[in-house]
Length: 173
Image 1 (cartoon, helix red, strand yellow):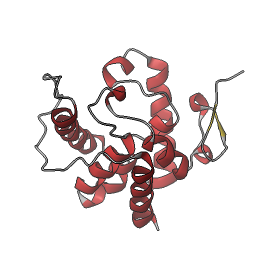
Image 2: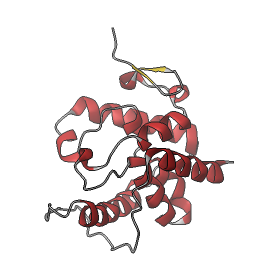
Image 3: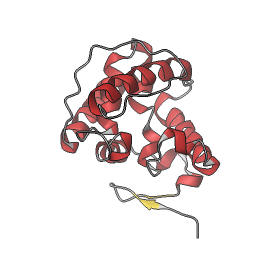
Image 4: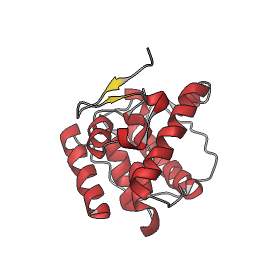
C-alpha cells in the first residue's frame, strides 16, 4: 500500500503522489502552525506558520503569496532539517511535487521566484537563529542575507493558524 496521511480536514493524501486537488489551505495552515522551526530545538515554540506569515509580511508585493506558501510542502511531509533533507532524494522529490501542486492550485500560472524567496528565507533564518538559537553560533548561508528588523512574537499554534489564514484570505479573496 502506498504511504498516506490523514489531514486535519479528513482528507487521505498520498504525499509521494500528491495531486492539486489534494491540497487544502486549511490543512496547510493547521499543520504548519503545529510544527516548530529548528526541528523543535529553539528556545521558544516558533511555528513554521508564523515564520511564513512574517516572511510574507516582509516580502515585496509580488512575492507575498509565494513567501506565505513557500514551506507548504511541510504540511504533507515530515519535518526534516534542510541539511539532512538533502540526503533523502525521495523527500526532495515529494517536496518538489507538492510545491508544483501548490503553484498550480494557488498561483495558477505564475512561476515560483525561488531566487528571491531563498534570499528572504535566508534572512529570516539568520534572524530566527540569532534570537531563538543563542546556543548555536554558526550558520552558513548560500547568499549573504540582509538583516531584518523584525519582532518574533512566538505565537501559540491557534494564533499562528489564524494569522496565516487571515493573510491568505486577504491575498486570494
